[in-house]
Figure 1 (cartoon, helix red, strand yellow):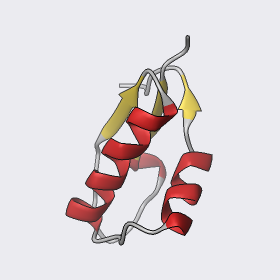
Figure 2 (cartoon, rainbow, N blue to C red; figure 1 turned 90 degrees about the vertical axis):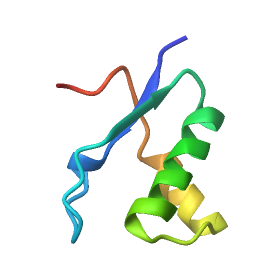
Figure 3 (tube, rainbow, N blue to C red; figure 1 turned 30 degrees about the vertical axis):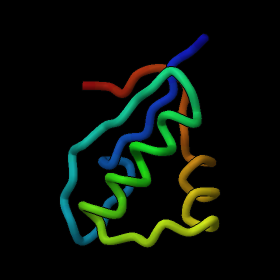
Length: 64
């Protein structure tokens, strides 16, 4: 099973964020990414937000 990740550095915005999140499953990664998005970036937890985020998951580990 390949790890999945998402890296905030790939999505520039108003908040300069260098956080990378990874997990063994899409479900686990989605939950932590949603929590990060809400608390740090001010997103709302909506089905549309979850769908968009999950499409951005990559296989492997983020670069240093």
